[in-house]
Length: 216
Image 1 (cartoon, rainbow, N blue to C red):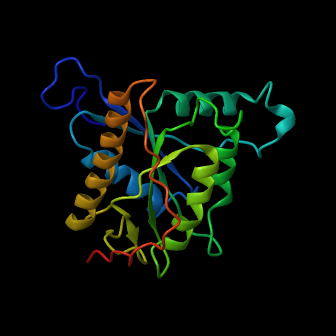
Image 2 (image 1 turned 135 degrees about the vertical axis):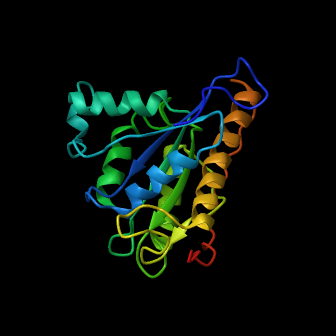
């Protein structure tokens, strides 16, 4: 969490980013990426880390009167200006728990909770740093109406850049995370400047990810 005011402004409120990890593992490196991103977030950006652990499986029959955990999650997503997802890669694709969480906020289709909301990805694990999972998320974002902010890409291979306690210690990776947060904040401010009737740009492209970074 960072300062409440952006540089050069005494009135502009902070950009609020909600970080969500797709891994429920206690020592998850993806969750560690979010903690590091919160630590290095630039002034004027608040990055809060939410949880998907208590969300039930999506059930359309419960949409009209969802469980309390879903209500809280929807409120957190609605209050955020942008989302930062830390995605593991399971069986060459996206983690089911995180997809389930987004399913809960995807109704009504392209509704106000997510429409044009900037979203970015980071990921740690495997030999390709979750590149396949990150690519697999893009059509999901497009269908939901989320505004994907693809750069800078953050792929962390085989846990590189972490110490034995799971903290991000590699300075190049910490700098990359700061840039990742800053790019989301810039997308939010551009959207806010456009106003409710302004034109927004959804940066979605089904292009192959670049070579994963390997912090040392």
